[in-house]
Length: 488
Ligand code: HEC
Image 1 (cartoon, protein in one colour):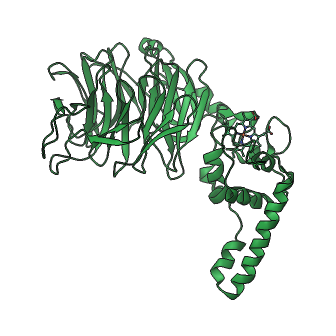
Image 2 (spheres, protein in one colour):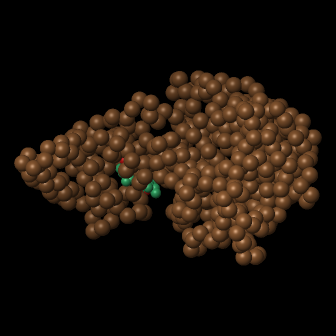
Image 3 (cartoon, helix red, strand yellow):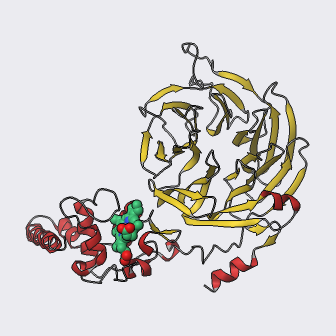
């Protein structure tokens, strides 16, 4: 395989020289372009991010090889050979692994080889000295041995209880924090695991229906969107899949546990196979960011809500847009939709958005659409002040919870599904509320938002039970985490 490499580079150089010669006579800008040095940050990192880093990061170092940190990217993994020999692509293990022979390459593992243009860029970058031009602000600093250290609580947008009621998962900075619910309620130190991954921001978390895994949607703005899937038994990363170049939202599992759906700021909804992360659904029917997703009871449809104010029904098998579930008549819509959840057993959808009114819709139209109708609407609940950012059904389907924000103050309400009546109101929460969740037994509602605090309220009385910062042990800041971060 290494014999093909010099030929490739020689050819590239020949072309480059021809180009330069021609460019001299014709146009200057071209010459400047072909002459340019290859930038790691702008040219090489995006290739590694898409094709390699999912399997070569601190939380999942395939072959003991970490590619998210420049030192280890160069030094290599379990073979003991340096991955990159500066100035010498031919002798570099990395080039050997990615250069195809007879159409197949060792890396990316079990995937088609990189495009020729990418191989050429990587070769040229190594030849030019394999320089690191990563901006300081963007360096990957955190892993299990160097956990994030907090000086202020990050905005909280993701919170979920595990189906067995044991754990509460909360999105932090660069990590998901796992608390043990029993200890939390007993006022004991409850932080039991820190799932530290590549993404700076955690936007959404969802336990698999069997509770064995946790799917995470997040990213680093303008750079990376990522789906992480963690195993709950040992809190290890099962896999990570980079998607798009921006933070992603609204992750959900299909009830059969086979698919993971999420929304993207490129207005698409996508779904991956939960087994290995292969993308199996891509739909661009929305015309603004897709903020939340949920599957139908039989896992054959995915429903999406968006800043474009609509809720859409998409068929999984064909990836086709089927219907707008909410009315799309101008005037009927009031601002974007932020959250959607499905009735635990039926194809009914709970939504919340800018109008502050939680509503339940039927998923499948039973009558042909008439202009201006909102036929699928089943029930409206009492309005919350401001905008709703998240909604959820209780597991027994008897209650709904919604969380909103009005002028920076948070509001959470629990209502009865049967008659739409208000059960409990949590008013005047000192933080905009962006995420809400019912505990498995329906007794508690957890919420959080701008302040970064987690609020735990009694779902019947609305009484505040606990308030804590998720990266602390209940109330106390995790001291050992900050020491290990400064002293690896
Ligand atoms: C699906 C997971 C996966 C992807 C994607 C992947 N790798 Fe790997 N890589 C592995 C595993 C696992 C090993 C250990 C050897 C093996 O199992 O083949 C490995 C080994 C390596 C090694 C050898 C390291 C050493 O010194 O032992 C290199 C170099 C490497 N990969 C480079 C890459 C590059 C470059 C990409 C992207 C173009 C990539 N890999 C994509 C899983 C992956």
